[in-house]
Amino acid sequence: MNFSKQLKKYREINKFSQEVLAEKIFVTRQTISKWENDKSYPDIHNLVALSILFDISLDELVKGDVDTMKDTIASKRMDQDSKKMLLFLVLALIIGVPSMSIFSWWGFIPFVTLWGIAMIFAFRIEKTKKKYDIKTYKEIISFTEGHSNLDEIRLQRNQKKDIRAKILIILGFVLAGGILTFVISMLTEVFTNH
Image 1 (cartoon, rainbow, N blue to C red):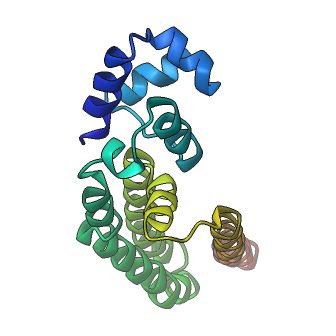
Image 2 (cartoon, rainbow, N blue to C red; image 1 turned 30 degrees about the vertical axis):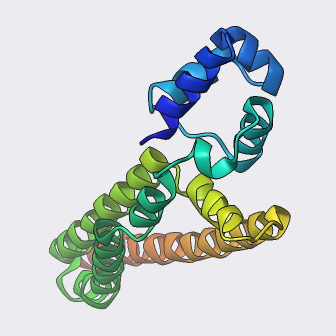
């Protein structure tokens, strides 16, 4: 991304060390270092602070990065991983849970396998989101497109988090229910055979 180069360039033009720049925008020197080394990306508030401090436009500061961010957010891999995760979760419920009832212990294998594959895709999605700091990118894109109400954007993001959390809780209960069903069927089989 170009931001890291732009940040370093303007920091050096203004004869700021990383420490001095960090103090001026109220972050740590390590944060500035991470930004300059493309290890993380600042949120919109820090970008605005930098553009004011350097007396340049936000567009000039993030030159070329917005298009890259849009591509990252619309990443086909993330979309494909999401679809695959949902497919395997549905298969785990449709195939796995009944197979536990029908085949007892052996029926647990398809459920665990399908659930495990779904979790692999879930971890890949989270890794991609963390790597590219997707939430920050969305805020920056919204800001550059003229949506200056960042509080509303954050509120929407938090509402989406709440919905995701509820879905994960439901899926957790489904998993626990499946395991409980399996354990009960195993115990019933053990006690009926004795």
